[in-house]
Image 1 (cartoon, rainbow over the protein chains, first blue to last red):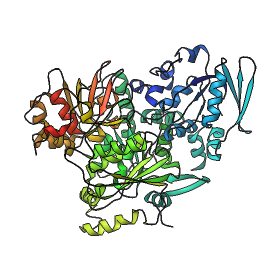
Image 2: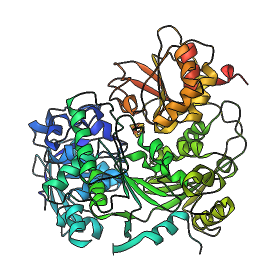
Image 3: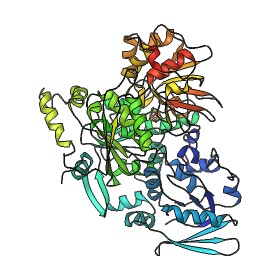
Image 4: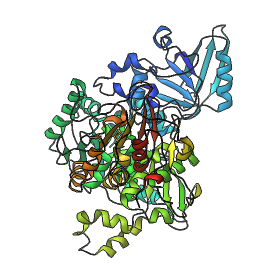
Length: 176
Length: 430
Ligand code: SF4
């Protein structure tokens, strides 16, 4: 199973597509690690500084609706994975992106728009870190001042089985 | 309670339901291209599981960047090529025989009504035009598809889109699908299947239906299905005539078993009357940002691109050529046309269509995805504008900082004549 949790990057926009997560010109990569420096390279978003990803050691992304829309490229979750980002929290996802996350043993968690509003509000005070209790299905956000917020989330049993197995290849290979 | 076509296909292919709502389906076709497959191949090799579940059900093509443009794309092609040869995959299409996957594979007769099809490519929904459940997947799903011939899906709900009325002059399947996406929005069909029906769809041939189904994903749809009918039989006839002993009516009857039942349950039904629909174009970076072309006459363009899995088929080239015939590209405008497969290329050549493009100043390139995804044969420079027959206008899609306006082949052709976004109706000859 993968490791989850750590410093959070907040991306306050809906419909962030896979071209923004990893531009098509890097699809010629034959090794996932080649993608690492190019994650979110073309994202245009006020307040977003590309250098933060490595400088702050980002491990979690919190964003809005329809994250990962666009092409089916699994390079998008891989670009996250090779940066150590294994947990994404959003209001909703494009189907293929969401499936790709769990297929790789990573988590694409869903929270309501209101809960996300409150998290974006919380993040205004400064950097936030997130921990996950997988079996208890809880997310815990801690701010710079030590303030924390605990939020319930849900994983369906199949997604949870994929996370526990380490991904779909492992799951399917053992089963079919 | 009746069933939708998707429910019927799921039932017929259900291998297991390991958890409620998660359906593991057996696959009829697993399609592979050189962008998303190599990492699946190298991962299978690293796991010591370099196997293929059924070499007759796995199809492969080098199409996205071909002939290879640099060492990296050459390496991707080589990984796919070596793998296809190693496993003796009969249906592997390389330089000289290759073309854009979603145009090439239907042309080869690989898709049938009721099939389950996956590919590591979001526009796999194109094959829904045949009444198949065809879905784009990621590389890991593809990897398991290659190894085990299965894929897991949550049973999608169906949005039925009924298209009625009559299409005006200069209005094509592309304009219809842009209108559908405008109404549904880019996420309106996420986790859903779109079922296209109504008199306008019934009257469309398979090429037009493929244009329609191709863009289901732009509304977030997992697949976009049309009911298999007479048109489907016509298109597939060279491949199925033996099976149906030369009896087209029997084939049509048989295909009917996949039709959604009259009393099936749709999540919702959207009624679209296309009477009065104008030639359309996208503005901005989302495919649902659609406007009528005549409102946008002062937007100038640098490049025309005619091709792709959306509109690179013979009927598309004919439509564009009928607008272009006897004209020249406007000063300073580049025109690029990529017939989507070698068969289309050759036929367009024989019909004199390629000559029409060339006389107008177009560059005719080989069948490839190329510029559609900003990889080769027509990448845009910063701030350049392209009138394109492709399916995606995302920021950076055809080159960083470039702007892509999506439209029909006739509309793109008209833009080439004036150097601005142009209502094609002024240039239609009939
Ligand atoms: S033509 Fe464009 S949209 Fe179609 S498969 Fe190729 S890259 Fe994808």
